[in-house]
Length: 114
Image 1: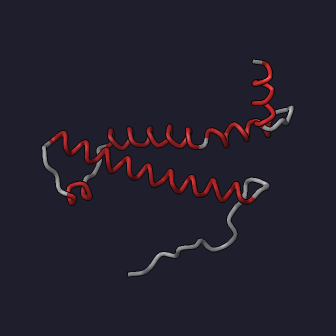
Image 2: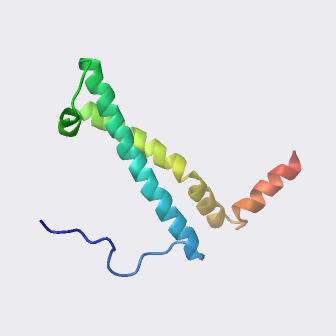
């Protein structure tokens, strides 16, 4: 059995001036992936429990979701990742806007108007 590499080869792509931001986003995305896997597994357990009272670990491991279940899970993941990445999208929009003001400045302006 071959072992997978723990590190990717080559340079990691960067998206922000501060490389620490890219590292934090990578960590958050790793955690988001784990949450999505856990949610799919919980969904499997709930689905199997609806059919019968007791289930075995092998039944969970062997479960193959239907197209409907897979579509529902994919929609949840899309919404979940949208929430996780919402702040990045806001920042990206702020950087791409004509006035070029960063997100924090825009929030400060809104707070002042209250």
